[in-house]
Length: 297
Image (cartoon, rainbow, N blue to C red; front, side):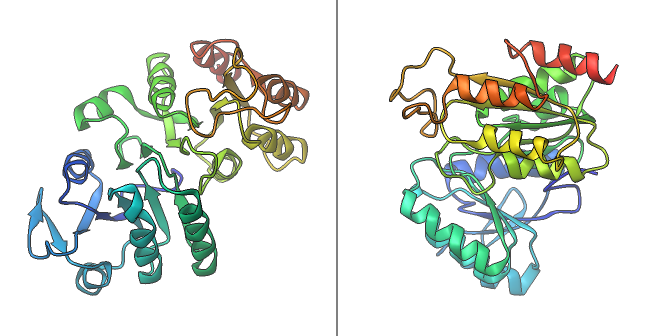
């Protein structure tokens, strides 16, 4: 199994005729993702890499739906409108790719998603990849790279950094293991599916034996993962690296969501809390596969 997406996931691409939409649709289609339809208002009747384009999500749904997931590649100011349209049509998983989506818009999407029983990943996100099955978004960049760098295996990867999502997964593959699913949760302060939620999904996945997590300063996502471990909700071994050790208070580190205010969200508080509950916190990203080898053998 895998979490969030697999070879049977039926995908819609919103903003498919734009530059990013076209490029990432090519990746998804060539990797084997079941991309069923695309939407760009005013471009209905076109095709992008063999995928039919419709003017609205409803038109696409009526013609070829239902869809399990939608990858949204529209400009940041239009993300809210696109997300609400998809949720209202019945899509239950959204990937909000753009950065600089207004915080108020994200909060509106969150409330709307709760009302309709939907979930979203991002914004400011690379996506999700279940090796050998499907990719939603842009992890890997090109299909041949994604096939080379990531292989099916027992390690679930959850990360707040897009670049480190790929790097950690690559290191795990090179160490002779592989990944059940690779998830970039997004780099903003408010995201739809933060680390604790993804870690819980890995806990429930029978194919995932261990979890690799890249965290960083800012927010309390990592502390909430520690709470789940302490409560016994998550029992699978977690190997974590926390970025931002040298960052000063009030300074942003790497991402919009990586900023320390007072002691909240600091590197020290995260590392201390995770170690208290038995999470394996390593000093270097390259130590993650070494620790996984110790755990899994």
